[in-house]
Length: 396
Ligand SMILES: Nc1ncnc2c1ncn2[C@@H]1O[C@H](COP(=O)(O)OP(=O)(O)OP(=O)(O)O)[C@@H](O)[C@H]1O
Ligand SMILES: [Mg+2]
Image (cartoon, rainbow, N blue to C red):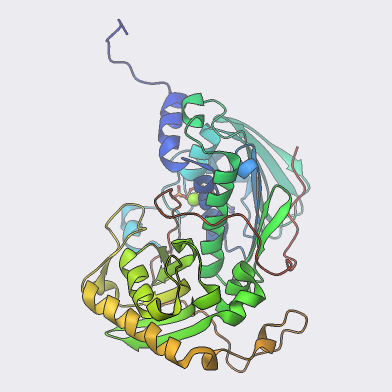
C-alpha cells in the first residue's frame, strides 16, 4: 500500500472487525443468542440449523420479547438492557452485559428478528443485513423472540474461509447444546439440525431427565449415580464405565458452580477411579456437578472462563477420585429402579434428582472452541423427542 496516511476506518469495517471476536463460528453465534434467550427468562428454547448453521440458524424462545422502542437499539453496539453503569459490573446477574452480541452477528450476516413482548397484541419484525437496519413492520408472532441468521460472513470472505465443513460446525453446535441441556435442566431445549431432531430436553429441572435427553434411557440405566462431599467440595452426577464408556473424552462433562468447564485434572481424577472398570483405549462417560466455595477456585485463567484453576489441585483430585471410587463400589445398587426412567409412564420418583442452583453464583458461561477434545458426533442417541413449543413461523 503506497498511501501510508492514518485514516479512521468506516463504522461498518470497525463492526466487521469487532464481530470476528464474538462470532468466530456458528456455535459462537448460537451461544450468544441462547444466552440472550436465557437472560430474557425463556423456559423453552429451540435451536434450528441448516448446514451446521453456515447457511441458516434460528433461535426461538418464549422469553420476555423486545419492546418496539428497543428494537433498533438491540442491534447497536454497546447498547444493553442489562447494566446501567460501571457499578453494575461488580454484581452482574445476567449472561450478557456488553451489548455487543447482536450487533456483531448482524455485522457479518443477514438477520431477521421477530418478537412479541408478553401482553402485546401483535409482533414486530426487523431485519439487519451486514449492519443495515430495516423495519420494524408488524408480524404475526407467538410471545417471545425468534432470531434467524443467514449466510454467516457473507460480507467477510476472509473469515468464511476459516469455517469448518457443515458437519464440523454441526458437531460444535451439538456439543454446545449438550452442555446447555446438562447445565440447565430447568429449560426445555430442542436442537434440530438439517430437519432432524438431535436433542430434546423436557425442562423439568431434573438432572436425570437432562442426561436421558442426551444419552437415552439405555445409557442412563447403565450409569452410576455419584454423590458425595469431601475436602470442601460436593460432587453430584453420573459416571459410566464398562459398556457405557466411550472412545474419547468428549462425553466427560464437568460443571463447576453451575458453569461448564474443561479440566484435565478432573478427567484424570475420574479416570483414576474408573481404571479397573474401563478398557484400555476407552474413557469413562461422566456428567459431574462440582460445588465448592468461590475463594477456592480461580475462574479468571482465560477470558472465556472455560478453564479454572483450583487453589489446592491435589485435594480436589483426591476428593473426586475418592467420591467416584465410593460410587463405583456401590455400583448398580445405587441406581434407581429402571422403571423410573420408562418414557411411557414416567413415575414420580421417591427422591427427585434435582439440580440445585448454587447460591450467589456468577452466571454460567459457555464457550465452544475447537481443541484437542473431540466433539461428539451429531447422532441422536436419546429417546424420541418430547414436544417443546414449536418454533415460530419462518419470517420472510
Ligand atoms: N432473545 C431475546 N429476548 C429478549 N431480549 C433480547 C433477546 N436478544 C437480545 N435482546 C435484547 O437486546 C439487547 C442486546 O443484545 P446483545 O446480546 O447484543 O447484548 P447483551 O446481551 O446486553 O450483552 P452481550 O453482548 O454481553 O451479550 C439485550 O440487552 C436485550 O435487551
Ligand atoms: Mg447477549
